[in-house]
Amino acid sequence: MTPTPTRSSGSVTFVGTGPGDPGLLTVRAVEVIGRADVVVLDQNLRAGDVARFARPDVEVLDAGFGDDGQPLTQASRAKLVTRAARGGRRVARLMDGDPATFNGLAEEALACSKAGLPFEVVPGVSSVGAVPVYAGVPLTTKSTRAVHVVTPHDRKVDWARSTGDDVTVVLLGLPDVLVDSLGQLLAAGRDAATPVALTEQGTSTEQRTVVATLATAAAAVGDHELTKPLLAVVGRPVELRDQLSWFETKPLFGWHVLVPRTKDQAGGTVDRLHEFGAISEVVPTISVEPPRTPQQMERAVKGLVTGRYEWVGFTSVNAVRAVREKFVEFGLDARAFAGLKVAAVGGVTAQALREWGIEPDLLPSGEQSASGLLADWPPFDEVLDPINRVFLPRADIATDTLVAGLQDIGWEVDDVTAYRTVRAAPPAADVRDAIKTGRFDAVVFTSSSTVRNLVGIAGKPHTATVVACIGPQTAKTAEEHGLRVDVLAAEASSDALVEALADYGAGLRAAAVEAGEPVVRPSQRKGAARRKAR
Image (cartoon, rainbow, N blue to C red):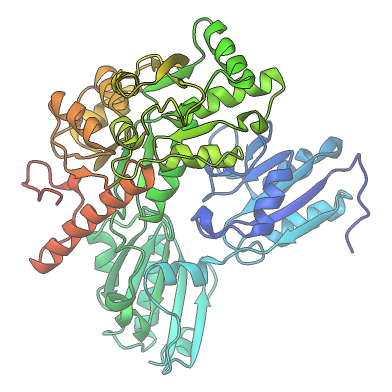
């Protein structure tokens, strides 16, 4: 029985985080991390992953290594956890995989019990089951009699029980330990031709799986330079990998994609890229700041409330955010838009309005751009329109296309600077070097300003890097800066942009498979001719 909680004693929750993919966190795990005062990390889930779920003021501690850089002992980890709970703090102790499986839960939970700390346990997805599935290897088939899970380390294993062809063996450990164990299994009488799947960094976008036989597995570890902890599956189910591999065959699997956007705007793009197997690097190229003087925006918002406008046109999410912030400042809400007509330049901007409780009256029927919006905007009609004025809250560097077009069809326009876009500071030297030398497989541009600013602060991407643009104007800007545009989104949204890039990646993969060539990323084939996106 765990002790009764008190405000002064704090509490500890041991949370299974799965084998590496943050998407495998359970709902309960996310809840616990979100409420924690202190998060104690294990090996796989790192601070950047935790930040997605934790409070901004959470304290993050590393249970892997001490201040001297040396690995912590089990006793040291237990002390770290119990100390973290002092003063009534809630501690989320993250443990890779499932806490009760190969993780030292018993030792740390006993330390909590001895210290009078209440604790609970949130089970997690075990690497034993998840990693083989992510490698396309089921542990059982209709001909499998048993699954033996072995963590060899220093203890003696009775390998004679695992020599049958109807037994699947799962081994976890460092490469040299696994090589020795596989040799012992072979010596014990397991068929040398039995297939073996060796997976490192399982369930992450850096996962790598090598298939060999029991006789050749040791050589495969060395030949493929497998140096990180491995999970090995020995048995006939490995033969199904060619048909069942779903994770490592994602269209952008392992691609390093540069996302030149501000951190708060890149979340959706990063998540979508991750779904297709890519690893993202967000490099802010602009900083969104308030206008230098607020009076123009303040007059426009007051005019909106007092009936000065017939229409309000939003050409970006930033414009929605700027007006919404001004509404909060004035104590207003979405009801102030009653009687007004609202236009949005595209689906992403429209969604930002809907999250505010406003349904746009006008969206482009064709191209999602200022030109597309203008093509569908009705001309001013003296009979039908009681007011002839439009409020356009925009960036300080916005083009005049929409303003001039609206004036041409009879509207008076208040073109108001709602926010300024300022070029960000250059990224770190290693990121600049990666951009110029082609270590990124692709870059996704979501506006002309991201093109101009990235080139300005970091230089032009290498010619091997796939360039993807959200729309024709952005593509034109990229070409003006000497870039070859490979991918153009079907519509002006970040989702469509990522999907177009994924289609391009799938095409590269299909072409390589058809030609009998290895599937490689763009960064691995610098200088080689690549197919243009259709």
